[in-house]
Length: 455
Image 1 (cartoon, one colour):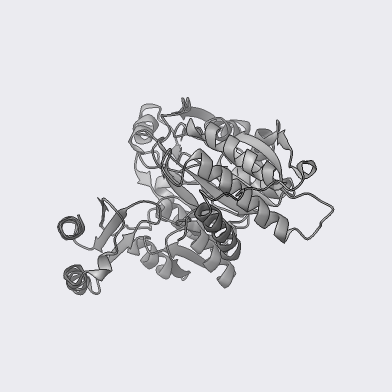
Image 2 (cartoon, rainbow, N blue to C red; image 1 turned 90 degrees about the horizontal axis):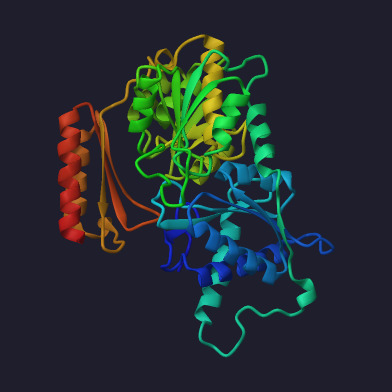
């Protein structure tokens, strides 16, 4: 079996696979893989570990650290920092891997583990498979009389270190992505930190670039992460932008790799809108853009009008990255707000993506609402169908027939996407159409049918 989903390993804390004993084994086997791949036997492998603000992160952090140390790997603890900060600092510290403890936009009771390679990118499929194979073997040995985590020589155990200047390093990295000839002194920016990993660094980056910053949802208590706030719940940001007569609003998710924005009129600009601005409104038009199966058809049409190539990857920023590298492009992302600007960062980074939009606003001397005027979103309806256990809807003839009929109805003026979540027992039903009522009715009818067939 594979313990890895779309983006690492994720689940409810206290239930497999997110339990302390499992995480201990995960750290141990990952350490073994790093040692096997170590090309310099005189140098002990090292990893950096960061986390978001969930209470369970303290438990997972300790278990991971112990597992890595038991395998003979040195650990550098970074504390609460956005996921892209961990990616950057993995490379900055010349570590062999980076580990993020986060369940991203999920509620506080979920948690997860994400890995980065030494170059600050998501780990390769090959390394993920190697970790999974060792993990499967060690889990199957539970209950045997053989030590499942043998320590051959205590002299070879890894050490644990805590890094005090990690936050400052990342702040300077973000600021360095903003064009030096501009500053933000004339802008009022509302930043919704989602009570997550970006709660201290995001407002500081904007302030140190000169902006008048109003920070909201920046008081994490371990359980309020993503709770009716952040990129998945932008209503409070929209309200705050209007109340403070702000120029723009920026919302992060719990681990700081997703962004949505709000213009000065209170209108939401999602990941598709951000991609449109960065691709078409900057000093140089993008050669091409990678979206995903979830990207709105309106983005595809708008980029076509601008003579910019567009391709769709599978859902997940690792797949967007793969297609960007294959095409030699630098800009891609998802409507949920994963935005990759590969000329600035090696992974999706909400703060850096937001700064690039602010830079375009400066260069063009236009408000965000003006920059998105050429982008018309097709009506879209997304319904999530939660199941008691994961099942494949395409193995049921009744459902396949209904999907085919819906797709035929939308031919030439919309599209249907049925997708299984990679992290939880859920089927996502998305309908796009030039008819908003049709979108809503069709998506809900299909969701109801899925629920009745699969339970």
